[in-house]
Length: 151
Image 1: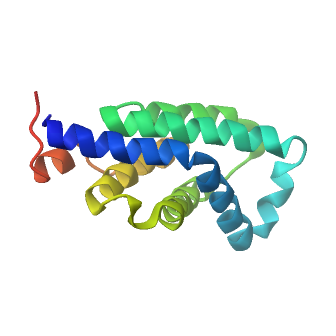
Image 2: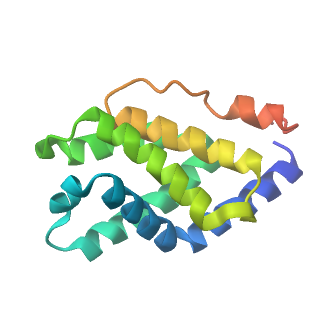
């Protein structure tokens, strides 16, 4: 991977990490606007749930950097939510809302290329959470398309 690519990605991931709480807040705003019926699922210690989601955002950023781990995170999320009878489509739709939260919070702070990498990671995560095979590339194709080189 080129130094230019690493620098861009590290800068992006630093911004994601710094804004992770705002991203989580925006995600829940979008989710509850679209699906007020799921708000009852977030009773109890909602602050703790949001903090766990914030940690997941940080782990997703690391998975984006390596191109690995997002699907494994999705499998863990599916297992953790098994008893809640969440339909697979809600996981997929949550991925769309999470991508929107990233864009709303980060806006122009990250470039299109970084948005593609984050979108791919979110896609792998939510596909696995929904029990489906990810339909996005593994990230290396996007890296190479941007001029980054492997090795």
